[in-house]
Amino acid sequence: MPKVIDDFVRMCSDGYRLGFNEANGGNASYRMTEEETDICKNELGFDRKSPLVKMNTEVKALAGEYFITTGAGRLMRNVELDPEGSLGIVQIDEAGSSYRILWGLKDAGPTSEFETHLLSHCVRKEASHGQDRVMYHLHPESLIAMTYISPLEDEFFSRAIWRSMTEAVMVIPEGIGVLKWLVPGSSDLARMTCKKLEDYRAVVWAHHGLFVTGSSFDDAFGRAHTIEKSASIYMKILSSGREILQDISDDSLKKICDKLGLKINEELLNG
Image 1 (cartoon, rainbow, N blue to C red):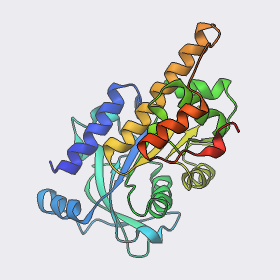
Image 2: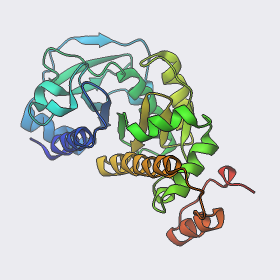
Image 3: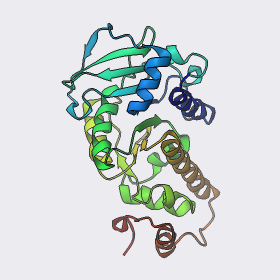
């Protein structure tokens, strides 16, 4: 398999093994580079005769681009066993209103949240000046548990995650966006997620999961993994029933970012 497929498979497999993607839960997509597209075309062969599938939305900013995507109803645990049946490569047409499956996705279409992914790619392509290419949705249990007992506010979640583990602010110095519960795959969820992605690279879906973006598979997966680990520490602290005697101060968070040349979102800090 081409390296880009192997890297996609690894992210899916790691997510399953860490319990992020049970059953057919979660999905992922990747906006391919020209070089990766040429390699996959040569090594895998593309079916240019497959039919165009009309979408419910237009993504003109992605016209002509190629994507790797998980399949609808497919299990993350099976991706490494059957990549061609679990994943696929699709191309958006020149109008940005339809797609064609070029490889894989046997007896399946792209993830049911494919159009949410595409709209999110549009936002992050512009916001990151083309750097962000990965969209990954997962179901991390500690973070989901937090949404039942915490205010569904960007500031609260960002600060709780930042202050629970030193490394958290390094991977999300801009903070985390948070949404109330919305129907999975709905236009409302897509629209509100895209709004949050204008400012954040990670969005919490209350009682549902996490949606992250990144410039590479390691970048996106590392962001998701760090957020969940910090959420797990936060929940363990709460469950201990003990008084918190010390934590990471706002001044310390700023010092971490200053040392690494990162810009922390000071609007989420206290004072």
